[in-house]
Image 1 (spheres, rainbow, N blue to C red):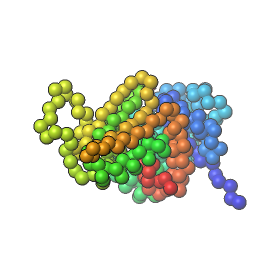
Image 2: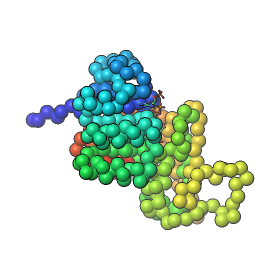
Image 3: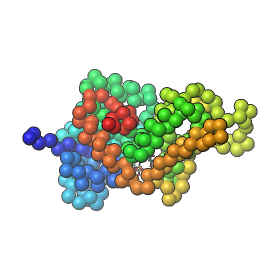
Image 4: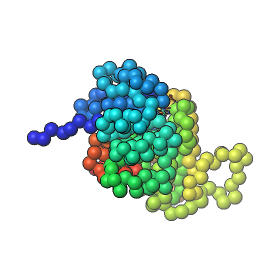
Length: 269
Ligand SMILES: NC(=O)C1=CN([C@@H]2O[C@H](COP(=O)(O)OP(=O)(O)OC[C@H]3O[C@@H](n4cnc5c(N)ncnc54)[C@H](OP(=O)(O)O)[C@@H]3O)[C@@H](O)[C@H]2O)C=CC1
Ligand SMILES: O=C(O)C1=N[C@H](C(=O)O)C[C@H](O)C1
C-alpha cells in the first residue's frame, strides 16, 4: 500500500490562544509535521521553546517570505488578526502554499478575489469562520429554520479579549440565513432606540448582538420567533480543543482541493 506523505505545516500566530492550541494538536497528529511558525517576535527561535510544545523541530520566522523561501511548506494555518491574516493568505497564494485560515474578518468580495487567484493556480485552501463541528451545524440548521422563521436574532457570546464584533461566525450564520429567509426588517416599524445600539447590529433586517465577558470562550444562540412559538439553537465551545477536529480536517483536506472553500460546511461529508 502507498504510504501517505506527511503534510508540512506552518502556523501563523503560534503564541496566540488558537495558534498554541493548533501547535499542540499538530504535535499529536502523525500525518502533520510542523516545519515552522510565523510570529512577530522570536525570529530564529525553536517553536518548541517559544510554545512549550516539546519535540517539535521547526523554527520561528518573523518574515513570511523568508519562511516560504527557506522551508518547504504545504499548508499555512493562520490564527492572527484580520489584517495579518489577509497579508499571510496573499503570501501563501504567491508561494503556492495551501491556506487554512481561521482568522475572522474576511468579506465575501475578498473571498471571491482570493478564490479567483487560487483557481488560476489550482491551489486548494479553506477559510472557515468556525472550525467547531457543532457551530457549523448550528449555521446549517439556522439556514434551514430561517425559511420558516424569518424573524430571527443572533446572540454571540465570547471572551472579553476578542477584538472583533460581531464574530465571524455570527456574520456567516446571518449570511447563510439570508439564502433561505424572505427579506424582512424586524421589530416594530416605529421602534426607537433610547440608548444607541440597544437593538444590536442590523444584517439585512436581522439583529446581531455581541456579548463579551470573562469566563466565556465562544458561544452562539440563534433565536427564531413565530406565532406562539420560539425556536432556539445554541452552541457552546467550552474549550478551544473544540476547534481542532475541524482544523485537522481542513489541513488534510486542502491537499486534495483545487479551489478556495469558504466555510467548513462546504467540505463536510
Ligand atoms: N475559525 C475558528 O474556528 C476560530 C477563529 N478564531 C479567530 O482567530 C483569530 C485569533 O484568535 P485568538 O487566537 O483568540 O487571538 P490571539 O490574540 O490570542 O492570537 C493572535 C496572535 O496573532 C499574533 N500576531 C499578531 N500579529 C502577527 C504577525 N504579524 N505575525 C504572526 N503573528 C501575529 C499575536 O501576537 P501578539 O501576542 O504579539 O500580539 C497573537 O499571538 C481571531 O480572528 C479569532 O476570531 C478564534 C477561534 C476559533
Ligand atoms: O475570537 C474567538 O474566540 C472566536 N472567533 C471566531 C469568530 O469570530 O466567529 C470563531 C469562534 O467564535 C471563536
